[in-house]
Length: 96
Image 1 (cartoon, rainbow, N blue to C red):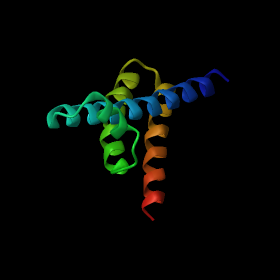
Image 2 (image 1 turned 180 degrees about the vertical axis):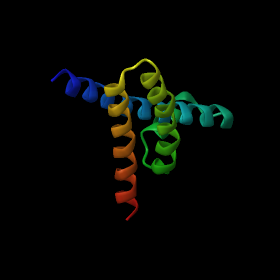
Image 3 (image 1 turned 90 degrees about the vertical axis):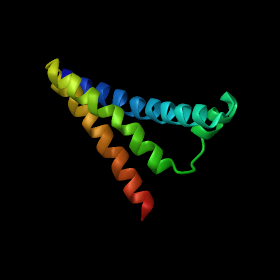
Image 4 (image 1 turned 120 degrees about the vertical axis):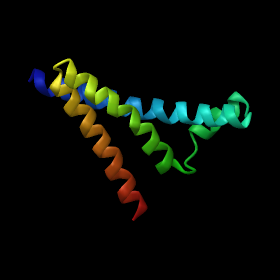
């Protein structure tokens, strides 16, 4: 039962890291273009080019995955991997 809890926690961490990755990407692009902070926040919640932003945001899961593997936290790594796969599947289905 503890293994399932670890996988779910890793999954939640993976989803949150994708959202943080999207925000960091939007923040970098917004600061580069000289946008205001409110404009950057609005862009983070828009669906314009969401697939591309989410794929870049999902790159944060890669170091998390390897961190969990190196710390021998395999179930957390499985959860992060599941979150990454789920994000990918959602956007593939959305493209169809």
